[in-house]
Image 1: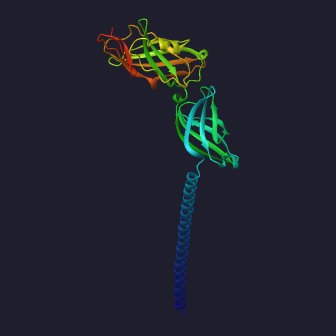
Image 2 (image 1 turned 45 degrees about the vertical axis):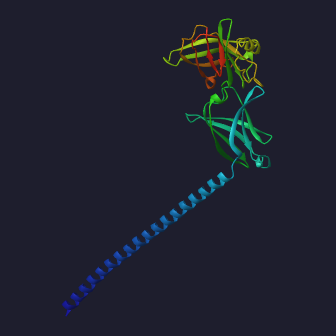
Image 3 (image 1 turned 120 degrees about the vertical axis):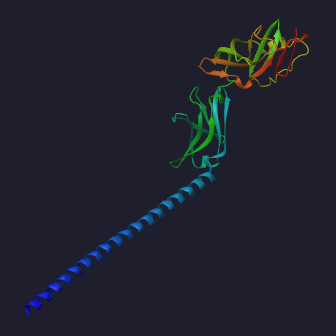
Length: 303
């Protein structure tokens, strides 16, 4: 009888151990399932948070675009009263919101140059110091109520404010060939000029040479002198142009029937080199006999 009792107790104990093991497994699986559910819930919440942030950022970007910092995205580089200035049209709220602004130029190396702007008659304006800005991407940064926003305007190059916009005329006087250059947008005076040169390139061979240019005391009188031969060349449109002319002696510099590309450069006392590349034109000297005339920017010499 005792043996049967022991056997029954052993069987019960074994069943208890087995059931306990099953219960532990079930408990562990339940905990794992709960952890998995919690992880999935966190992932869903994180995804919702990221999407909400992305949507918010997109809305802010849309609002920023709709609320431009300027009335016009155009800007201009001008020369006023002997100085170079950057101009951009402000919005009406520039005054009501007490905005402040500065122009920024991001150069190719990643560095940024900036200069404060003032609001004058609805236009953001800054006077550029000589040599301050290099070529790069121009932006305007406007601050209001402690918040600064920046808007890209476009690219700016040193050529926009350090080049000669000029008209040139050819002429012959007393067997001397002249190139007369009239800077139409130059804020420099005669005392600011250190050196002027005409750079000549043979269009056929690529050979280059330089001819010094002289600052003329009375460029208008000289222009009249070189037009003594008939028929006269059309006078340049010199209305409102600065009376600052240069001459270069090109006597015996050209070969017959050859095209030449001529540019001119002027070095000033502040180290600025003004290039006249935009006004360059090919000139051709042809020998056909007859007289000398000038027409349409080309020169024909006929001895």
